[in-house]
Length: 318
Image (cartoon, rainbow, N blue to C red; front, side):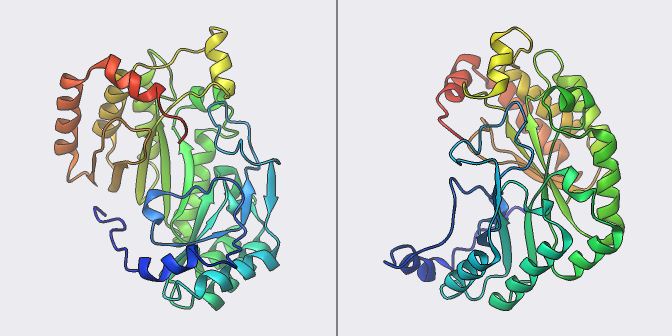
């Protein structure tokens, strides 16, 4: 997993695509994807987020609506356009905050279009909320797996009920365990996003231990960790101003990462990815655990809180 996507063989084909005068892909706002989806064919299936209530989130502020499903005609136009320049894509990733919220028939139609225009694609992925899985039966999930859905990325963020509730995630640890069990039983791989710093000042260790206890009962192939950055337009910023919540220091966030890795016992690839992280570490657990912990211990010893905080405050967006 260290070379998540290091091949850029598609670039010669994509360069003329981006400069093509009749370029007309139907992307809305900023397009987000997991770092490991860099080589996937990115097709917009939805825009915005159905939940749109997480206190820390500012990702979809540039979209003039809460949520919109892309018309199937637009999706097909985009696939036709992109497949002309990237015909040998090995994977399709549907963009949007949580396309997996779509019902079975819509997801089926999307997968069938992906197969039509990207016949070499072995799988289809997208972002998902835990609550997106719940309405789908085991039989529907099994069929979606057969249609190619695999390696979906779930924004779990944490495995601590207090933090999940305060941040208005809309689900708790009970739901994480129940829905991931459904995916395990039908053989659909999934990945987790973890958000370091979500527990708040003084709760990082307990929160990380609680999260490890929950995650250890699941089977994510990848856990990607980002670090919480509080922007002034977020509801969480207002909670801080009102004295209802206090942010962890940057060094406390490093201790939190160390605690989480120490307590994870499942085999998974763990990495800090994205500009919000003040350190990059990655490795396969449990094999690389000791090396990763040593890296974090060294980083903590050398850390300058003022310098790290300055970096955090100068992040314009994620």
